[in-house]
Image (cartoon, rainbow, N blue to C red):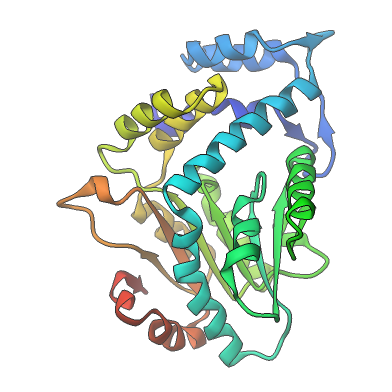
Length: 306
């Protein structure tokens, strides 16, 4: 079976209208049938056990499952120092934009923010400057509400929005994401990257699992040991299987855009692939490249832009 044909449970149990605004009812039997047809027997069994009324999945239960799964994902991000990884590239990118542009505030937007851990961490520890506005965006309003509540409890200067990252009333300057790209089929990536250019984004950095040969095994071991939610275990391992390789991501970005220099930021992994767990595909306006390289210092060797 083509790895791209497999579906994650979280992609199926929450659905929205064509505009991505309103949440629509999800038939449990339809989800179970689709997973079974794809040969994903365990995933089908997990969904079949979810409560439903009149055949429609219980929205409150689904929200709870997704909350618990994202909470476990947050722990994974903490243990793998993911916010620190993002900040290492984000800080010089912000500085490069600040040196060449006059538009403020500089809006850093996390695409598919979930519970907002990245944005909340940046608000607490990133120190990106008073001219930077931190925003998390997700289609799932229950996750956005939880992120907003956490930020309020922590007295953090950031905000969270339900909707489309490329259709914000106040456009994004820099767009980032963690663990989102593998949710898109390879044939959909080109239009995704094109949306950045249409929205006038100055730079993007999308972090996702590096599809090295140890990745699925490592994901299985980690999720078996650390995750408690069945959905998180199932989807977490499949995420590693579905991850796009560097060539797929950079080719799609170049095909979908013409205003960015495109590349991947990270060390080579041919000899020690286990050390390359997650890396970003990067796009940046050409006039910002030299300043970004200077800001990266010695790390600029790991950013290959074309």
